[in-house]
Amino acid sequence: MPFTLQPHDDRRHRPADGTKGRDSLYFNLILPDLELAVFVYTWVDQNGTAGRLVTAWGPEPEPLAFEVVHGVPMAAADFDDWRLAGLELRHPQPLRTAEIRYSGEHLQLAYDFEGSHEAFDYTRNPGGCPQWMAVNRLEQAGRAQGELRLGDRVIAFDQPAHRDHSWGRRNWRMPQHWKWVVAQTPSGRAVNLFQWVVRGETGTNGYVLRDGKPVALVDARCRASYDADMTSRSLHASLTDAAGGVTELVLHRYGTVSLPVGTDTVLHEAACRGSIDAEPGWGQFETQWPASYVEYLRDTQR
Image (cartoon, rainbow, N blue to C red; front, side, top):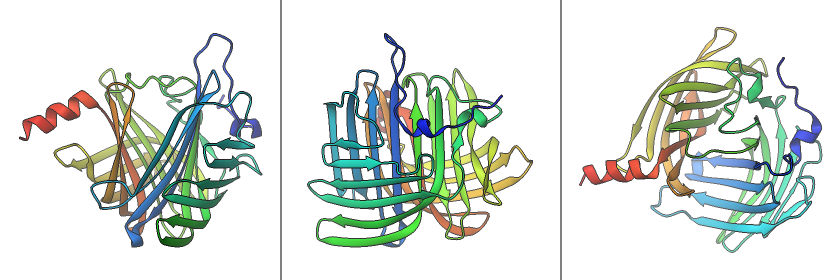
């Protein structure tokens, strides 16, 4: 039987004593008309040790803001009232709404999120949730309203956005590669794709919205292009869902930021213009690579 999300799943998931675990939460804001992108990411482990990353980027070689804090003891604090190094996070209506306030050195953000559909958890997919990544994971498209202050710029926004929440142990070295993609259009179309290669085999999860309801993806045929440093340039994907529908997704990067993770993993985040079934929209295209592999490929181009 598929797992059924409960309101407490928007809170911390504390593993049994002696067991490793991790909760992570993510919220994005893609602003293609301004060639700007922002995301907020926070995490906490089984010991209550937490961190947060807030970043903004565009076409420039360096991010416009990259504000990260690690190793903060949070004790019993939970996501209904999460206060961590300038970040405040609440879930007034679990599985539906979230409120974020952030005040940092270069970036301030007021961000109110409301889901546009029931949250989709990865165990609902016929292939299940890959246990090297999480016990379970929820993804949800919605709408974000608020204000962003970036240096001297003040930007009001009211548009589609995306969030996720993952819980369980994360084994960063298990995947040989992954693609994680979210995309949306002004009319309410939305896609979440997660495709990975583990032990030489490809797996797929995520969903596409059909009539306002998430339908699990069961296959994805992807063609991506990359720069010499393996930052993502474009993606063309044909996505097959469990109802037999096929969705065509196209993304083209306008900005990228890279995140080193652990000792031999790098994540490249591409903010993109694009389309879902030819309707113009925008998205975020994340790729994961072993850092040593990226370095090897970069060296061969010299």
